[in-house]
Image (tube, rainbow, N blue to C red; front, side, top):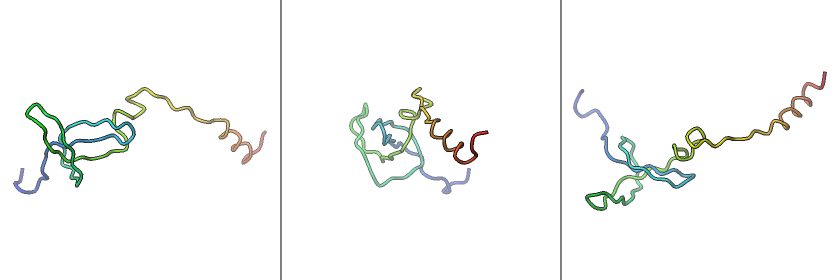
Length: 84
């Protein structure tokens, strides 16, 4: 690897905007927001990145199913193409 061309890979805290869950991982993303995180060596300050969806709120990982309103779709189809 060439030196000096790669972004800094460091610890970052991600927060789910829907559930408020936070997790510490490593990333190259930058953020002007910071958060205090309790570690075994004491409290550390890390960059904070707020994300819309994480594994804590995504339906695939939580098992939550969405119910679709199919009745409205069927009526829209009948209005557009009529009943045959």
